[in-house]
Image 1: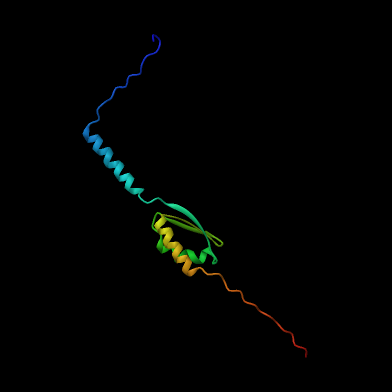
Image 2 (image 1 turned 90 degrees about the vertical axis):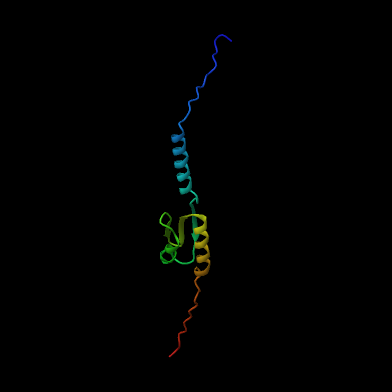
Length: 107
């Protein structure tokens, strides 16, 4: 066909040192994201400001735990999320209702 030209790709060779450097850097970056962080919301019986000091020692320096009323927001890897859930299952219990009745005596 007279009006259409084929595209030609020129393949350049990459020096071995640059290739090794690229593979090494990619490997290091890949290891830093080995465990993906997820965000979970836990609804609790106790107020979050009482639970956060108990749970903070379980999380790492790159993880985060915040709360609002009876909700905990945890950003951490799934393995840490499992630990937090097991601790919450042990310590977070519904509050007991207390019935108070009054009697007025006739004097």
